Image 1: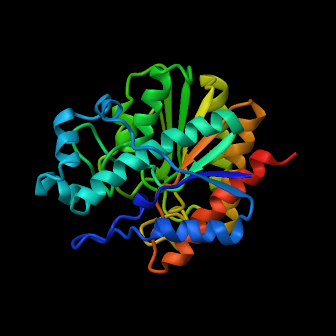
Image 2: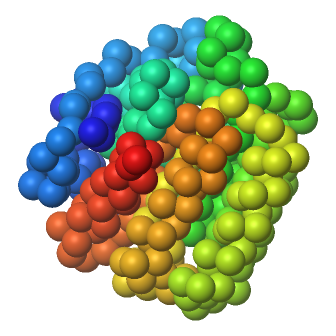
Length: 300
């Protein structure tokens, strides 16, 4: 059974400026309905402002929530921040937190959006407005739902915002495996970073992941794993520089779940990046990612 968090506000109107396409999030749900007959959709509440401001600068939060973000900041984000976008990012942050809470109950759950790992304290960047991963981790720890959280970021782009926002904490470990020559140009310092050269294929990638994941789980001993499950390491991704196949992506997802399940650690995934001119193909990649994780999590 796939427990998936989704809200209609995830699908914001397409901005007049910028290249980001929000209809992907509806296409993901269409693919889930077609290919995952056993799924339950959970509707999130917006993340309360107090928890957003626990991670982000209150002045920046006010700009977002009032749709008054300076144009320079909007350029860094990649699209204008409208009232619809302001609503969306509150729900996507609430969705990642809800997925984590569901994972604690069921072992695995997915948010059909989120993974906004480039957002920093006082600005968004790279299509990311609020950092739902950092917000969720901070809230879970503050409310006593977890003692130590491992954030595994396998998006093709480094999780720089997450690394910066959670730097210095002993109760969070950030692992990022990403393309060395991709955005952001200036990398942050995660707890552990593995930068890959161009065109890394399935076997090489999976060997690196298995070692890093096994070591991180053993050394840090988390009781929850938050997973940024971007599918942009795929060979056909428009913004990626790696070369994973469909099979490689599925093996990646199963490995993350298997290694966590072996230690009794629940996993909550956020959608992350995936880009291409064929939006249906990208959406199907995301859907298959979540379906593979649910299948591995609940297999006997």
